[in-house]
Image 1 (cartoon, rainbow, N blue to C red):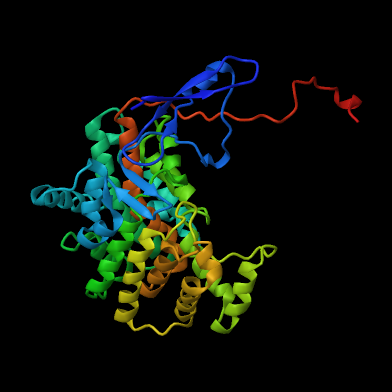
Image 2: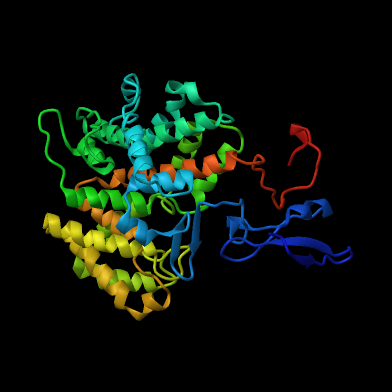
Length: 428
């Protein structure tokens, strides 16, 4: 793996040889772990050129617009697989055969209920609290209810916790929504698919059980697949960092949810709808497009471009097709959705956006789909967390399955040198 070496020349010191590691695909990586012995460290704010770990789960080529889960293109998984099959793949490394899938689906369905006392936990939150604030709390609290499998050094315990999290997240997300609406919380139904069950718990009530639209269930399942994992992003890195301390899996996932809450990460699709609110009407688009092009104007078009993808976001291509299917199924005449479609048209044809690869990304289309389904904007990031949980727990399991060290980044200190305290009466 390390058949090449780089040489770092530091003025006044002997050259330092650093191994060059080669992965399956992607750029080679210079191993700088030995650099600390020389009294030097690398400086890379934002981890723009730093590999924080080795992983076999997800690969992204941002220049080519490629996203692979365990080697499988995201487009193929979205077309030929479903979310629970993708979960099995991420957790276990291979797609299941028919018997393995049936067993996995059955196991997940048998863990969808949450401890009944967890309901009372919700009463401590205000009804108007942001759903992500509640989600952070209740997921972190799971360790108080399921403390029978928290030995992170026990592979069986890790498997049980992983299944519990994948199974219970839709139930918790729906409970968060129902609590905010003042509606009765719905129990899960094991006769429904993963996506159908989530929509059932979200939108049905004890007095009226409506059938779930297959088109909407398929759209929901695709949203889950397309958000299942995305390599070493901020929230996944947070889960790994928390896990490196030996924290229990529920605490680690709660930490991931907190990181995901940021508008630059999981809150991006919520920010898209807020931006559409700000623009207000199709007649205002030209003015806001001009603001977006003005480098001196702080206004940004949310849902366009991506930090990693310098080409089109491969997830967005699938999501656009799903978006068209949902809007056709629902026949919605919504001014905000009309505004979004007009913005999409401009971004795909305007040379300014094309030259800068500012194409609509997955957040742009997922926000439109979720709004069309009837999910409030404040719940968007909760659904992202639901879908991403399997990616987080897969990375957590991968890290714990091999040798690892507690994460401890270094820093470039630019504060005061050592100084002595002056008595209070003598300070200027």
